Amino acid sequence: MNPIRVSPDRTAAPPHDGFDVLDVCHRQSLIALGRLAALVSRLTKVGADEEARALAGEVVRHFSTTARVHHEDEERHVFPKLAASGDPATVQAVLRLQQDHDWLEEDWMELSPHLDAVAFGQSWYDLDLLRDGAEIFTALMRDHIALEESLIYPQARARLGHNERLEMGREMAARRRAQRLGHE
Image (cartoon, rainbow, N blue to C red; front, side):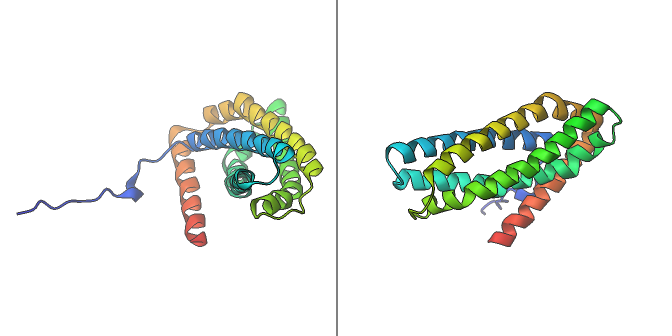
């Protein structure tokens, strides 16, 4: 008689603290910024070869999907409680980060068509715009992440209880699953 094998239930994974998910995304964003710099360097030295096209595709996928969802997560789960904290410095930092999200999106909307062109092997991209835009986008993104990790995340972790952070992680995971299913 053969024993019955039960495959692990992938939906029953233990819930993650929402901040663990946010922290991972920051690491992924920093990697994507490194790829963006490598892409600009490669385009300058070699042109839009296969490696450049692959780098462009990776950068576009990250900042068009993962980073946008990450900002939505912060707007839903992190910023509201801190904006209502009554602490003027914290409220000011939250307002600045919300403005950063708008600027990052605006900067991305300028960069992404050129990166898409590279990714799809089209030659109409503007290398000077990519170089300058990538520098501005990278500086803002790095500064944004630094403020979140040094001030906002520690304060939010302290204000949100363990169960709230787990629920935040569950909601974020459910939204990501729904988005993935919508694109399959």
